[in-house]
Image 1: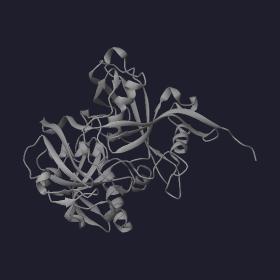
Image 2 (image 1 turned 60 degrees about the horizontal axis):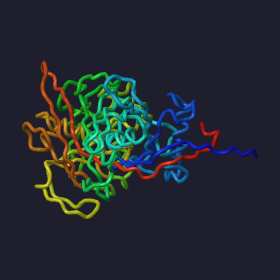
Image 3 (image 1 turned 90 degrees about the vertical axis):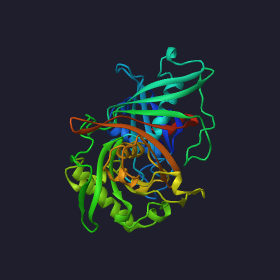
Image 4 (image 1 turned 30 degrees about the vertical axis):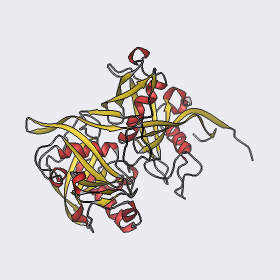
Length: 396
C-alpha cells in the first residue's frame, strides 16, 4: 500500500461567542481549495473529521456538535469601505457536505479579532489602545457586519470580565452590529417576511396546523409557540435531543417552513441544507434552572426561546438566530413580540438553555413593509490554538 504524506495548512482554532471553529486565510489554502467547489468542501470535511458515521469527529478538529463543526474562510476585502471578507462553512457531522447557506453569528465575534491579528486590517486603522472598528463583508448572505474589537498595546485584547451565558470563562467584550440584516435567500435584501404576514398557518403532516412567524433577519427562522408543540419553553438539551420522535417532528416543521418561505422548491432539498432555516419555539417568561445549575426567575427575562441547529437543540443560542429574535421582538404582532408581552420595544432579554442574552434591533415600517436598520449584541472571542492543521495529501 502506498503512503500519502500529510500536508499542513496554517490555521487558527478560535472560540467566537458560544461556538468554536477552524479559521483560515484563503491565501493559505492549497490553490485548488481557494475557490468554491468539491476540492474546498473535501478539504474542510477532512479538517473537521467528517463525514463520521460514529458522529464523534475523533479524526478531526470538530467536536461532534453543530456549535463546533464549523469553518471560517477570511480574506482582505477589495470591497469599498470593508476590511475583510468572511465566508462561513457549516460542516455536517455525519454526511459529506458543507452548508454555505447562511452566516454564523457567534463566530462573527472572532472574525474582527482574527482579521486584526493576521494582517487583514490596515495597520493605520488599529489604535494603540482603544476600540478597533472592523467592517466585515459577510459573503454567505452579502451583508455588512461591524465588529468593535478592544485593543491594548496594539494587540487584540481577549481577556476581560465580560460574561456570556453558555461560555464558562469571562473574556473581553466585542460588540457586533448586523447592518440591514433582513435578506432573502440570495442575500438581495428581499422581504423580511417572505409570505408578507407577521403570522402564518403552517400545515405540517403528522404534526398539525401551527401558527408560525417566518422571518428573514440574521438567518431565516421559523418561530412557533412552545405550547402548540407540547413544550413550556424551559426545556434543556436533554429533553429534546434524546427524543428521536421530537427531533423528527422538528425536522418536518423545518422542511415545510423552508418550503413556505421559498428557500427550497421541493421538500427533499431540506436534507441537504441543514444550516437554514432555523426552528425556534417561544413562550412567555418563566423561571427555570439552566444547564449550569443557575436558577433564573421570570423577572430576569422578557421571554423564553429555544432553538434547533443542525437537527439538535442548541445549548445556548445561535448569534444569527438572536438577530432574528431581536428583530421579530421589535415588530408588534409577531409570535416573538407577543411572547415578550407585545407592544413596541427596541431590545429584549430572552432565556435560553444556558442563561439569558440581550439583543437590540431598530425596526420601522417603510411604505407598509417592515425593515430593520441594524441589530446589536455583545459577544466575546478568544484564540484557542494557532499553527497548522494537518490532513492527508489526497483528501481533496
